[in-house]
Every structure is written in structure tokens, then in C-alpha cells.
Amino acid sequence: MQETYVFERAEKRVPISVAVRLSGYERSPNVEMTFTENVSSRGARVFSKRRWRPDAKVQVVSLPGNFQARSRVAYCQPMEEGYAIGVEFLEPQGQWVVPLAASPERTING
Image 1 (tube, rainbow, N blue to C red):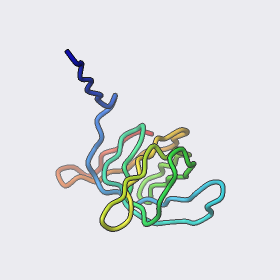
Image 2 (image 1 turned 180 degrees about the vertical axis):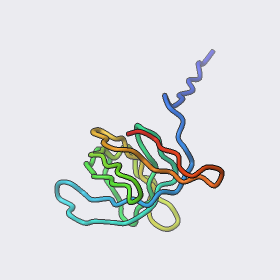
Image 3 (image 1 turned 60 degrees about the vertical axis):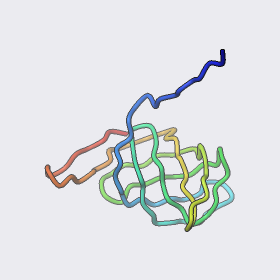
Image 4 (image 1 turned 120 degrees about the vertical axis):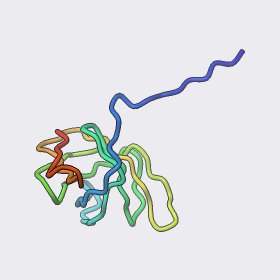
């Protein structure tokens, strides 16, 4: 009998599009303005025009709110137009500000 393992995230991600600025740390001084697909206090899925190497360091800064984090690229998945990258926040600071239609604001702590 073969065992099947199902891994669940420790924390659910909020499916929301938030404008962010990505900047590479070491050899990639490029800055890219883009959007998230989902966020949590531990990480996010972000769209990018360029390919990122797993374990690359990236700075993620939310354009609304005061969230920023030195982060690690967990994966880079090719999409039809560009890439989806999973980032793990290593040193989060501030809060995500996520506007919701039903309420004035909702925050997700970093």
C-alpha cells in the first residue's frame, strides 16, 4: 500500500491582487512593478515578466500600505505571459493593506 501525503500551508493565502515593487538583490538591480495573485504573512505568489532562480533573493514592497520584505524565491513557474513566482518572506516589516468591497480596509501583518 502506497502512502499519499497532502501538504497544507500553515496559513491560508488571501486571493488578492496588490501592486508591488520587486527588486533583485545581488546581480539583478532591475526594478519591476507588478501584482500579487495571493498573499499571507509568510509569503505571496507574484507575477513577473522575467525568470527568477529558486533561492534568489528579492525585495518585495507593497505599493499600498507599508509592507516590505527581504524574500527568497521558492519557485518560478512559466505562464503564458511571463512567470509566477512564489516568494517566502524572510524579514517582513509593516502591514499589507488590502481593500475589500465590504469593508474600508483589512490588514495582513507581515
